[in-house]
Amino acid sequence: MKTTRFILSALVLGIALFSTGCKKKSDDTTGGGGSTPTTTTYTRKAYVEDFTGTWCGWCPLMTYTLEQKQQQHGAKLIFVGMHYGPTGGQFDPYHSNAFLPLMNRYGINAFPTGLVNRQTVVSSSTLASNIDFAVAAESFVGIKLETTLSGTDCSVKTTVKFGSDFSKKNVKLVLMLVEDALKYNQVNYLAGNSSYQSHPYYGAGNPMPNFTHNGVFRRSITASLEGDVIPVANTGLGGQYVNTTTVNVTGIAAGKGKIVALVINDTGSTSSTQVLNAQDVIVGQTQNF
Image 1 (cartoon, rainbow, N blue to C red):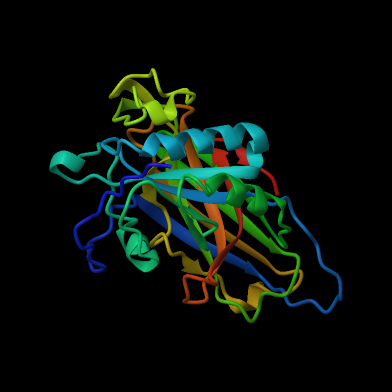
Image 2: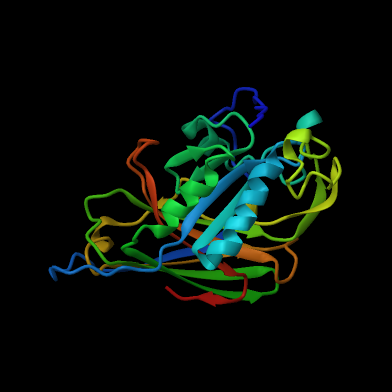
C-alpha cells in the first residue's frame, strides 16, 4: 500500500492544555478489595484514538476502516478523532492542544496513526485486525455513565466497578467530550488514484466537500487525557468508584455531543499501559455497565 507520512514539528510536553470547561468535581469512593475468590466480567468496549487531520490526504483510509468496523461491532467499538492542525498547510478547525502530551508519549508524529486501547500504535493497514482482537478480549472493569443536561452544563456521574483485583495497579479514569456529525472538507488522496479504484472514496473528489467527521475530540473533562488516579482502596475485587463532575457543552450541537470514559492501567510504559474498558453516552442520556 502506498503511504505518505506527514511529519510534525517537535511537540512540546509542557504546552498548555486546551481548556476543559469543567467544574464542581467530587468523588464518592466505596471500599473494595473483597475476599471472594471469583471474578466478574463486563461487556468489552474496544477504544481507538485516530490521530488525523482534515488536511491529511491519506487519513480517509483510517476513517473509512473505523466506520466500517463500527458498523460490524456496533457499540463495542468507540473511537475518537484527535484532529491535529494548528496552522498553515496543516490547519484543522478541530485542532486541540490537549492530546499533544499523549502524542509525545507514544511517539506519534505522522498521520494517519491509530492508537488501540492506549497500547498498540497501528497504521490504516493493520487497524482492522487490531480492533477485532481488542473487541474479543474480556474485561473485568465495568463503567456506567449518567448525564443530565441543564442549559449548557452537563452533569456527569461515572460509576466504575471492579470485577477483579486491581489494587496493585495504577488505575486512572479519563473523561472527555466528543462530537459527531461535524461537516468540513477533507483532503482525499484516494480520489482518482489508480491504486484505490475499488475504494468508495476513489470518486469522492479531492477534497471531499462537507465530509462528515464523527467522534471528534472537543475537550478533556479530567485534568488531562492521561487520567486522574482512582484510589487504590476502591480498585480491589468488588470495589466501586463514583466520580461526579460538570462539563460545559457550549457550542456542541444538540444530540451530537458524547461523553467518553476510559479506565486505564497506567504502568508508565507505552508497551504495557492499557485501557481496561471504555464507555460512551450521548449528552443527556444514561449508559449502563
